[in-house]
Image 1 (spheres, rainbow, N blue to C red):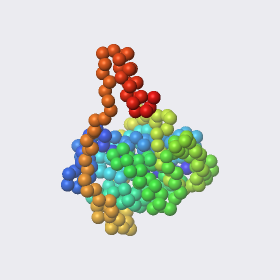
Image 2: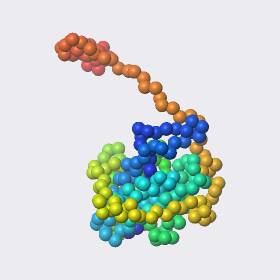
Image 3: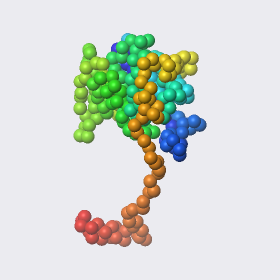
Image 4: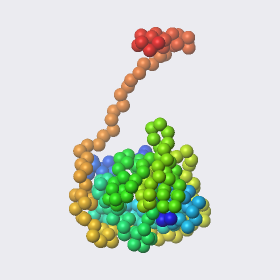
Length: 267
């Protein structure tokens, strides 16, 4: 089986800054991590490889040069090879433009790595929380998709996905090739081994820019190809609410709480 895992290097959520002019994230100089949901997608691919040793896992990311660090981390965990999609023309792309660029990059990578049977993504990136790129990739490629996956199991040319739903889980069977997005499962992803980390440090990561993606529609990429327009970004002011019950004794506090609940018709 040939699996592609799309990953994103995201800024540490405690260090997010916004460009006041472009209304885009400032990534330079900000500590970055592998998007946690993408880590779950990589672990799902690794678990398939555990039971199907001939499985090949390729990771792909779109971002600046520094995103190579995230790709090497993925190689240290489970991936066999990595590609970075990066170019000035891609800067400022919204989710629609990003998913289009990635879909074109997937086709290019397939020329080297062979046809991908499945494409795994995290359900969303923690810096944007849109949950749009994975499903949009599926639409660009014309593939069936399953979202909110917890686990995946290969059965012939069928992928069985345990999917999180409001009332519990469902098992969805989808024919390959397909796209699946993953959310947090009950288990934690594996960590890199020393041997794999050493191999990852030596790994050469090809970079695909706009010239490498021959035939890409330049009107559908970057800021000009992004229909999303951010008018304003701000942190909402936290409003104070609730009632503090501060009495000298637990007994008096309990009496006051009872009077408040009884007056509200709750008790």
